[in-house]
Amino acid sequence: MMKRLLAVALACVALAVLGVLAFSEPGESSEEVRLARQVDGSMVLADRSSTAPVLDLYEDFDCPICKELHTRVDTTIRKLAMEGKVKVVFHPVTIFKDEPMRSNSIRAAAAARCVPEESWLAFRDELYAMQPAPHGEASGFAVEDLVKAARQAGASVDECVRSQSYAQAHLEETAKVRLEGTPTVLLNGQVLGNEAFDAATLERVITGGSGVTV
Image (cartoon, rainbow, N blue to C red; front, side, top):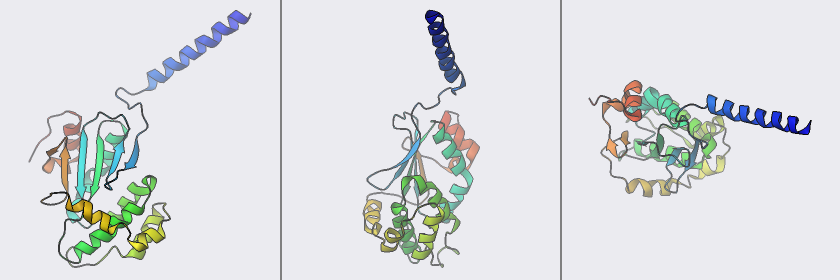
């Protein structure tokens, strides 16, 4: 009787394992995909063992074209990252030299460094939603507004945001980056053109399709 019960139990375990394998998507990452902050302030969305293509996105939160890129393709690149098909590295930078854009950008980026990983993407969404307009004229990203945006994203980091304690570190890291403008998008180190703004084309480029450079 005991032998029969043991055989049945082993059979059930085998079926359970087969069931897990059957419902696993081909190419699905075996590690948990999560967002991780790097020493330089960049944010990496991938699993720890990812060998997927690397998509580097350099963005200035006060940049209207960065907001346009975010609107057009952010959902797609997050989806691909969660599927293990791309490793996304977000690089917040301050590209502007003139006011009020420069100060707007610094305040937003410094606040973003305060926000913990689990709330960072939601806070990034909030930043683009509240981007000052018209560009080049409007001051924005006021500290108290950034505090509220962080809370809206699920992070209570009021004092850190108010102190702007990460502003200098952000500027120091930005100074190390050589960019002609934002957004700058690279796939495995190669700069992408207008294909980065089309979700379907960008997905084909990332996943091995031909894509179209315009």
